[in-house]
Image (cartoon, rainbow, N blue to C red):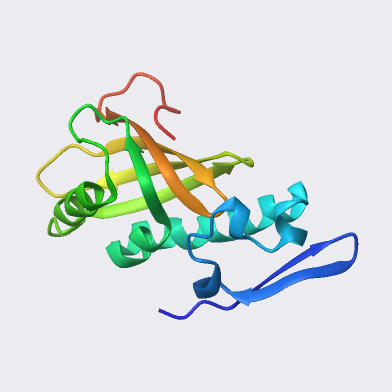
Length: 162
């Protein structure tokens, strides 16, 4: 998978120009100083990498998802222990389901956290509204929470879920 160059600007100065592959899972201390010390530049870089991550999730690209994950990886889902290897196994199992569709409807980000709001569809099951929340270290995911809600077809609220 090839990603276009990511350019980060602050105060009209070019702080960094690199392919996303060179900045995959770069912890805060290892980022270029101009990015790490400039909140706007760091947030812009995190938003760009979040967009790549959201697309990889929709595309079921586990390798790209894991490229943005670092140890220690802390998991808050009650059904899964912490650790990157365990997350890899869980993601592979979930994303390998036939005809599974993950539509990332929105992303929310700040300097420490990213949230993905997802509409998950899988034949034979009710759709789900999912919110995945990730804590970041630089451009690396280090912690995860999720909330899942079954989307009932007879919802009273026409604005329900999304």
